[in-house]
Image (cartoon, rainbow, N blue to C red):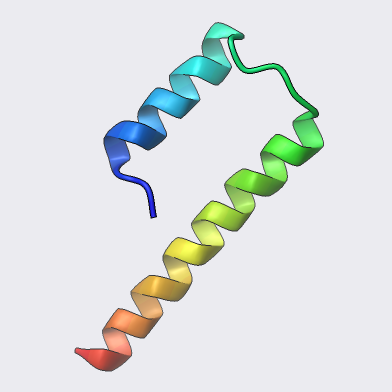
Length: 48
């Protein structure tokens, strides 16, 4: 999982137009990232 700073930096690059890519793929990466975060959070909830 990325730190909020890195995530914000990534968003800033996208907004600045520095990151050029297939929007569908970018969207999928964002979805995957947050899905992984939720999975980790749920696992942490179970473990703790």
